[in-house]
View (tube, helix red, strand yellow):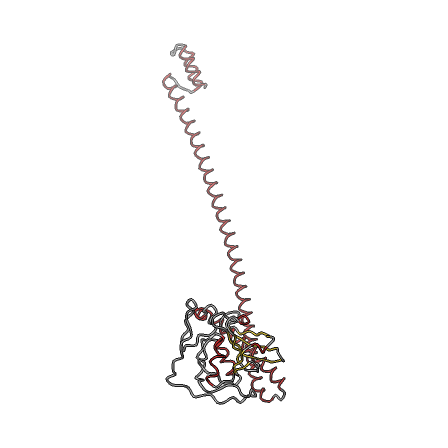
Length: 327
């Protein structure tokens, strides 16, 4: 501003006068008007350059500080996420270790149960009273039930293919197909090309039960009620024909093999439910095995009545004389 004022003053005065020379000399040390103007312009340019440089430096500093803050924020977020992930991983490992410990403990208990069952089986022949024998047999059966249920869990995928929506025992040899709309009726049994030797006659105290006639081994669909009835009676020393049909047909076909069929319950007898009777399937019926008899009340074991194939359960029935029994 002083420079512009001086220039204006010189324009009004004689530029070659002594006053103008004095002003130029005092302000800029210039000896001429042109030298004075050039000096003023250089100072203005320098000032603008310094101002621009300061502004650029401020912007650069501000940008640098913002970038540093953003990087610091990102690093902090990454650290937090890593801490959270590490905590979740540690929790998952702890849960897996706990589950493995529980599985190991359960397997150990089951192994102990198998050992005790073997001990009971070896000592059963030494028991004198029928009550003691029945108690030992019940314990062994419960252990076997657990074994069957574990087998079902291990073969669940395969068993699902055999679950035919209520089919209580398709008995065609080797036929594990599911029910197609309720139309697969049990075909006539195919003759066995090479029958296995007939089992020895029953040596238990269930007199008048079982037969070797038609018994070629368990030909019923694994995991179904018919398969269990054959298997359970075999455990009791009772022979059962291999092709009696679906559960609701046993009471009709058993007599043709020489088995006694009546309404009198007996331990080891197969209870043949009519279709729809006492919760049995409306088409195939059902079959179970009598485990205990107390007057008109009976306890039965059965498979695939609840929980799917291979699942063995117990049930108490009353008015026992209403059912058909295959001895």
